[in-house]
Image (spheres, rainbow, N blue to C red):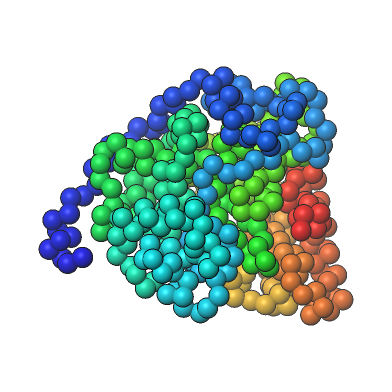
Length: 452
């Protein structure tokens, strides 16, 4: 497209968003639409029911006593597509998620000119034919390179191929509006010469973006030895409200199926909850994440306990000369609390401790991204104790990284001593999960290798 054509192209005219978009279905109607959506996956006698929630909007409640570890439901996605993160391999088929042979983008792109990477086996499939026709109609500007912005929006574009009950279900889901979501649409539009500009189509598309970003999961799964990361919308699982120590957890069977299980015994009538943030993040990290991505501030029991059930995930070392006590937030109802040393009882301003925490976070993350497993073990054992207590959540993330790499890849390359370090890290993480009351959570199953 020439510069003159770009100047003449009208900008997208999206309506200014409200804080939350109108939901078009009652709770009962939503439950009926979910039954249709689940289809053959719906249990004959579900252990749960959909009802209004005192936590937020609608939720899922136990219709009978549920035992720890019991599978509650499994669900296929309503919409799904690549995350298109920079860290992922974009040369992955958008339908079967297998790596596409070859070494260059043009080898992976559909030869018809839709701009989507698709493997040879999926190019003639009816599903790709629909998407290919639509993208070619919009005229992608990039023909020889995989465009991450266009690839990322594919999960939402697939809303155009939903049937009527599926569209009703989409409109029955909570959809939080956000200016960032508008930018996502605008970035996608910039990838095409003839992106749709009809107002009713834009409104439907934008609502889908909002519903998707409000409820979607990032699904990690393994396809032919290749780790796949997709964004997927599961309407039933998306109804589970948040608790920082939840009674349910999920994992993915493949890129398009989620499995939700109870992590502890759930009494009849109790609400079934999951965590929207990582279980082993500190309270401040969880609060910031939830505020930025989910637009609410959690005030659960764990969030109000500065020690987090005695795990001290937030703790840092005291900066007073001669003191190596643990410093924790004085209270947790604000994102900028003062911090107090449990040994010398000195109080430190949040700004000072935040700089200290950022130093630890950046130092450890840089190591995670660049070090071998052997170097990480040395770093954790020898260097981290100088500036970070072993309970700090950032150091716990580093230990999880070592566990993950050593259990997912060739174990024969590691010495018995290195394997012993990994076992120790595993026991430390399991002890923290036990203190939190996390039960049979997915993280526990992953590090004990109950989930491959």
